[in-house]
Amino acid sequence: MRFSRTSTVLGVMAIAALALAGCGGGMDGGDPASNDPNKIITAYSNEPQNPLLPANTNENFGARVVELLFEGLRAYDSSGKPVNALAESIETPDAQNWTIKVKKGTKFTNGEEVTAKTFVDAWNFAALSTNLQKNASFFESIEGYDEVSAVQQSTDAAGKTTSIPVPRAEKMSGLVLKDDSTISVKLAQPEADWSLRLGYSAFYPLPSGALKDPKAFGENPVGNGPYKMAKEGAWVHDESISLVKNDAYDGPRKAKNGGVTFKFYTDPRPAYTDLQSDNLDVSDVLPSNALKTYKSDFQGRNAAKPIALNATLVIPPYNPNFQGDAGMLRRQALSHAINREEICKVVFNDARTPATDFTAPVLDGYSDKIPGNDVLKFDPTKAKDLWVQAEKINPYDSSKPLLIASNTDGGNQEWVEAVANGFKNNLGIPAEIQPFARFAEVLDLRASQSLPGLAHTAWQGDYPSLYNFLGPVWKTGASANFEKFSYPEFDQLLQEGLAARETSEANGKFNKAQEVLFKELPGLPLWYNNLPIVWSNNVTSAETGWNGAILYYNISAK
Image (cartoon, rainbow, N blue to C red; front, side, top):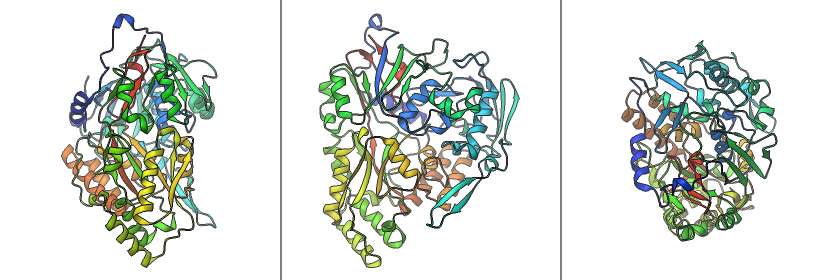
């Protein structure tokens, strides 16, 4: 494989070292002779938020399906190292002008050939603002993105602002189809690590049918990955999605099993019971009380390691209680009122580590000494003092409890209750959980700017870099910036980091940008995950990747 002479891979060595050191038991794969390559695996999941278009899927339950149905230019191995998948080569002389050669001879499962054009068309479709794709901002580095992604703001009588697509072009000028197997990409500025992100699902190719009728395609997607939809009607909404092995696939993620059926649960407790009785094969979501017992409950059938996954409480800027100078003080008070260390120890049985930044320790460049991060320290006296200061500026409306929106399918009830009790005991305000059966419901509320209180959210890395935990989440107009936060200084520092020629310089800028986040506190970092997974007696081996996603294709069964 040929890679750019100037590109720098961020985070790979740190992740690889942790992956090798942090795995749990039961990973030896068992007796190969007893493995059944045609066995269908059943796995924990829930209803995806949207139809399964790669560029419109940015939540966990949809992503785990999309990533099995499609293959991109690159993939990531279990340690986070990027490997070429459909890319024959990715080269650049200057980190701004890139030439991508696409492998010939691969096809979508409908028989249509995967070519350079299927990538170019898919990327232009994703970036065009009228197509309303959630992952559009991942193409922001390409010259001409500003033209195709243009929107204008409209404010109604109630003061609510919405974005109206007004693209000034239909295709990105920096994205050029040279021939059936060659793509030329010009970035708006040099970015040494740009090729690292090409394994993320937003960059997957699409067959022509997807562009003709995206809605219908999303209900029954046709991909080119290690799996395909089992049959017409494989997606039974609010129940399951069934995938089977794609025998024509010949990439780096060949399936060791016959397929994966994702069973939808709105509560991890019955799923845990199903696992114990071998009626479910694998899960990455455990009820909180099982964190103390899963190793003994699943002896030799569990694994855990530090991963690129964090948790945050988002504070919507449209909530009047948290606006202005009083709001700033209250956000700080909330943060100091959370006993992260105690919750990680008591509720999570040390399966979480208290956060010290907005990224994750497994990433290259991570620092626990970012100025301003002392706001994450538990200090009930300071929390109360800050709240009193805020009251003198603008009294808090305590006529309704402070709600913390959280999905019951994620095993969050116990820790949310602990956080709410911290607010009650240390600040003297009513607080309680606002439960939702599906994570998608919380996302919909956030996207419509309708959240009455705070929201639990988590970020699982798309590709291994600090930027991926900052740009897509907090940058102005970014794909997961549902609350529409906007901090010009933060955006500028991110841009300077992207343009850096050296990894250390880039990470310095990204960490400097975090200082802005600690000053503004759009969200409260909570903890990092050391994600445990467990599996049934039907499975001989399972593991997670660098970001905690289960490597379903690598699961062996008997």
